[in-house]
Amino acid sequence: MHATLPLLRATDFPPLRRETLTTLQVNLGYRCNQQCLHCHVNASPKRREVMGRETIDQVLGFLRRSGVTAIDLTGGAPELNPHFRDLVRAARSLGVQVMDRCNLTILNEPGQEDLADFLAEHRVEVVASLPCYLQENVDGQRGQGVFEGSIRALRRLNGLGYGDAPSGLVLDLVYNPVGPYLPPPQCALEADYRRELGSRYGVRFNRLLTLTNMPIERFGSTLVSRGEFDAYMGLLKSAHQEANLGRVMCRSLVSVDWRGYVYDCDFNQMLGLPLRLDGRPRVHLTDLLGRDLRGRPIVVADHCFGCTAGQGSSCGGALA
Image (cartoon, rainbow, N blue to C red; front, side, top):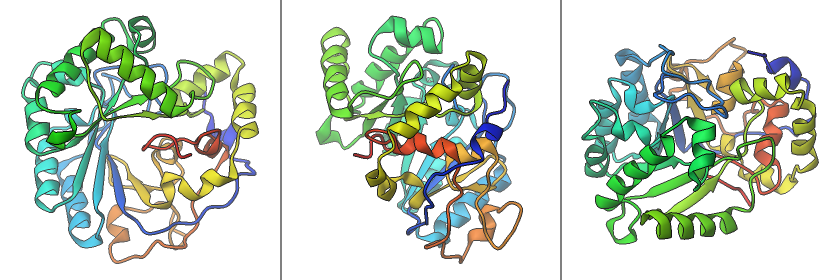
């Protein structure tokens, strides 16, 4: 795999500073039941990095003392962490909003037959990756049979009330391009998803979130191999919108890796660019207790243009 950090480190991306911390994004490990081309985490069934119980307890201790209102669980497939359900139960008992970044097919895996019921019982917000509403595109990007398994999982979630406004059970879908180009306008694409998934499969959801592919890890390496890296970076930079700088997710979020170390965002985590604090080479979540991050600089590199290009991109979808 080609390392992309040397191609990204020298940057003219505008400086950013933090605002009030509201969201703790926790990567529970890089193990996944899928291995997708676009994955910026380079997750796969072969990965063995998994957050342990001690670090889970440190996450819960931070939630109790920090005033953070939301925890965003990601991976890999976060549900494969053996402590996933304990973490969800404890976070919900604290009144913290819980988001699960779900690849959908995990709901069909052996041993996860009751996972959908568990998510509904604890009113977990499901943020589900579905990079297209067409089977050939999804299977081409994520593997044979993934689309069919995703539809089966979506119907299961719908049957529990997910995607229906009166239930309050939130089901958001996530789109990312299948190649080196920007996502189309989020609102128009959401209408297409709603129409096609509804008419073809009877599937309902709350929102569609569009994400730009980041030029890092597996996707970035593929760009380098194909000689497309420079062109893609040129696209991101030419589409940069200053207005998006005020809404990027790193202003109010920190990303925690499976060992408990902290980064300004999930993408910086994958590049090994730690959050800066008091000149330390790396910062652990326990180092943040009692610390106010407001006004502190955010570590940036050229990949940050992926968040500000066009309509913008974040874990919550388009910014504009």
